[in-house]
Image 1 (cartoon, rainbow, N blue to C red):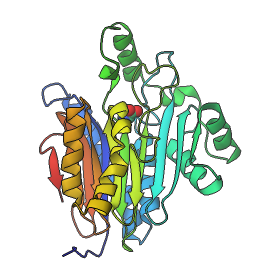
Image 2 (tube, helix red, strand yellow):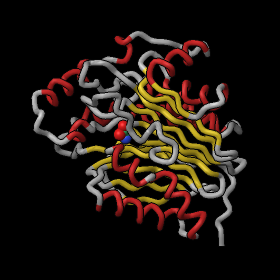
Image 3 (cartoon, rainbow, N blue to C red):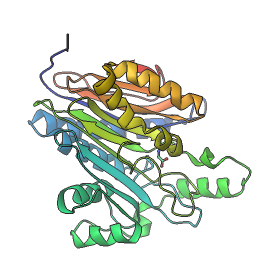
Length: 314
Ligand code: GLY
């Protein structure tokens, strides 16, 4: 029997990656976990006040975009050419409206640009200079390159450029951010934002901006936000397939999640995802040593974690 939940659920991630308890500095971990708590507080307050899942995921991602601990907005990784190009997407499970931007360089909150594409344009995905122009025309806050840049990300670029023998996704530093939510009316939404891969070239776009790959929401099945080696998530259309399996094959979200993480691993992909069902169940999966993540619910204590159980349902 389908579980009936009232109330709300908010799950977020701050990226999956190769960090281990031995390699992740305690202060770095604490900064990221504090950032996750702040995002849960902002999104949770919105949901507690009766706000929509769409507003909650947008504000949670906005908070994480401003936090230099994460690879999204401020603190994004550098391209091979030394620029910062952000991707973001948002989707509303009520009517499957969606908006996304890829390769934006000047919008302080790429997730706001994605939402503006959804709400104020006839399109779903805008890219590069055109997306930046649209964002400015819409009056969204613009920021100079220095706003996004951090010395730590610059060092990561220098390290990768010194090792051209490494596989392309060695530039996958944890830090893509995402949020999924179910609100008190049972609607779901998803949002994802990232700087992509360190040293990415040639206008490379990852899964985060692609509806169905890194981001998807459908009131009939659930909402999903992914993090990891984007090329694999694109090939598997992870976010859409997760919801489609539930809707078309009748799998539980957990069964679909197990299948998708197994397929990701079989293809050599690395990363993970978070999901919520329209009944308010939340889950996460990752095949990396860690994934920054957090969960908040009406009437419950918010929790954050980076290591521990890679398979979770709550
Ligand atoms: N998952 C983020 C990216 O590949 O760009």
